[in-house]
Image (cartoon, rainbow, N blue to C red; front, side, top):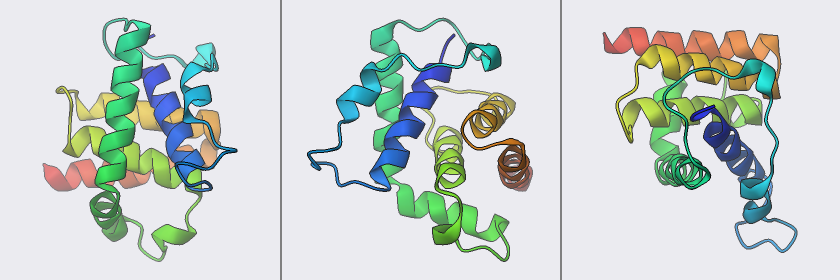
Length: 148
């Protein structure tokens, strides 16, 4: 396992922020960061093994960068979701798209777009389902093709 768990953690944190303020007493980002949830049947090989500290650092980069550039990431998504309002999209799908775009637009390290897309599709399957995976693939694929 490499960055997959970091992406899962980041997705859980971003999703949680959709419902709670950062200082909400019922809300504990620390608990999410310490959870051992992982779906081993969908792991991918997207780089070298990360230590727990490196995993948390990567997850933190994803959350902070995605949060800081949320409006810009949403503006990137809008042209590709014709007939949809971002605010009405499934929250998991919306955050998966933001996370993937974060890695593509503000990379911490260079990753092939195919790795980022594959990871987004896996997250969609894990957290939302096959239809969401197809939706996420379509949007991100269109974005990547538009940059070629």
